[in-house]
Length: 396
Ligand SMILES: Cc1ncc(COP(=O)(O)O)c(C=O)c1O
Image (cartoon, rainbow, N blue to C red; front, top):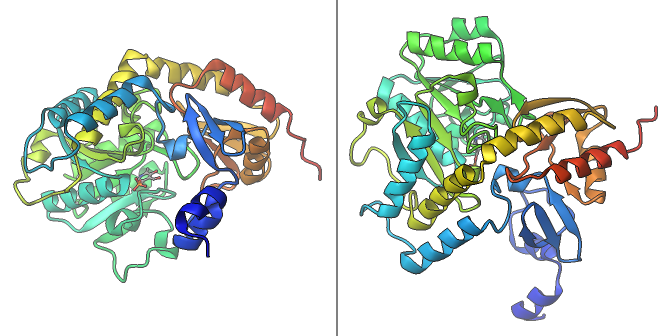
């Protein structure tokens, strides 16, 4: 038996991980060693253009100096303290985040992940209304914890818990009359993704989103926008709901929020926040100093580098240049795009990877997902367009 340090140097980490972790992930066939900008450099010398961003996390790409510096400096100054004490760095992150949120959403509760943000948002809605029914939208994905998974479409295949924490029903997506029928005064919350990420970057129609707001307001229901994937500039607005001009009661955020440092947030109005006091919610790591410094730096970089403009320009370029080869049409918003293909998206993903371009699949077998860093450049889009053009036509 070689000792552990010897194994580390010699063996493939895919084999080593398979030996010591629970095998719940299908993994891609390369091993990143480092990354810079939008490029991943692999152990065996490949340079891969990353249009997937680690599931929409790497908003600033890799090695953005403002983010790296903020994390380094904060780790030297104060690596951790919990919410038992107030911190300048946490207060600043909350101020920056609420400044970017829709008008009136001026309170934050920090957590560590998307599922944890949704779990807390749903708890808050049940506590605030005293009701025990939640509506979600067909094809939604909200996470793997008990409440977040309960409102995830088709989660019964892997849900695992013996009971769901509340009654759940699903509004057929974009069905305005079903929304009006189903949203009644026994409902605690409606949770929706403005652009359904895992479903294939499916952008809900503006009329449907407006109908959710109108009906929830009429019946005293809490409207939760899950912006875990669509937020932090990804859709060309800081939050995607801002494209619709809709103000939800709660927004949940995670993924790109810390540019790669794990963190999440529940953002709400002070009216909702006023219903909660000491002991009602909590998290040891939520709002820790490193995460808070990363949140501030990510927001500042989006502002200083004009990344919302860049996202909109790159989106326009992708829509103009990339309906070629297997791509029939494009859905989604900003750099949360679904390329609808004439063949299984997994085949297109694999073929592009052979050309050193990383994209993602989705819950829709025909849809290839683009979740590129917000710092994507025009030449990267041209590279993608050429690679798509070069893919062999379908033969029957
Ligand atoms: C819209 C949405 N909500 C929630 C989650 C869960 O986030 P996490 O994996 O950080 O728990 C995801 C993850 O893909 C997501 O896309």
